[in-house]
Length: 427
DNA sequence: TCTGGGGTCCTAGGACCC
DNA sequence: TCTGGGGTCCTAGGACCC
Image (tube, rainbow, N blue to C red; front, side):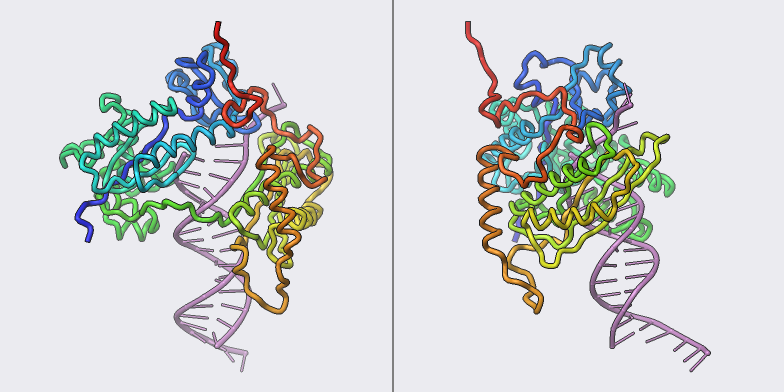
């Protein structure tokens, strides 16, 4: 049936968050720049220059602030509205040029290049189109499986003489063997630090060791996921392209606080805000949930403080997507787990037991869906979509600033908020 | 003083049923 | 009082990803 061997590309933006920042603030171009996590806690993205300075991924800012000052490194809070919008633009460039695209993460997409007459050339073309239309530089890895495309992408980034595109399917067997031998096993997609350690205990140190391991043995000593990885490394496709993202099976919302709090009202406000965000996501995929999980905890890094963490799951009588219903359940949960006398640092919720609206089993206890509630929620969602998040909200999410997240260094929402469009002054 | 958030999949083990 | 094995469902926890 299929006359062509499968071929995948992984297109991945270089230093995505840092690049987004510098596109709209040219003063940052060519400079050392780091982007922070929510709450300005950790360094989650770095420009090439910041990487060259040796600033590690995930480092706590407070340990590196002096170093940043010393090296003249710019520091930015994260601006997800901006990154999300740039991500959509990049995706649409790819979709304009390829029929089958899977958006894998905010800065990565898999493409199906099966049947392309010159896939490597196609890779260069995609790269230049993305750059022309978005100013984003990306790397392109091409291979007969997703795992190999991912590996090829890493090579494209690490070995600049390929010009940002590397097609492993084009390489002679011996060359691939040498390449596999040159990289440690954790360079493979799906092998993290823990697995690396246990693999090493079995004598599997390099990518080549893993690629030549017996998949059955891997399955017994590890699991089926890693077995698939081995097969993919030889070029046997086990993972397919997923063009449509499946509905979420769980929806989480949680945040650390800007400052710790002992006040239950702050916790309630934070929880209410999280429920409201999560419920919006739930309705956006036309789903309802059965359970509301609530958690809170103190700051585990403050070892001298008394520590407390607890969570609970509150089942709903009937699956719902009504913010008010979910909120009520969350408050029941919060009351159950709250204990006074602790300095709380984080609160969160998770919606689970998710199903599509309309597929619930009809039984004695099932009520018919509350249409009034559906209409109200969809009106609120539409208004918020149009006028900005939080324009309309349930009263209890109305908040003071105590628990709010810190974002002192955020750039403007250049592309998603009319009031923050970049201004160009011509003299 | 200051240390992110949101997801998936798999496995082991317990409860329960026949 | 003695006693089996298999299947399913659920949950907690671990590993991974970005």
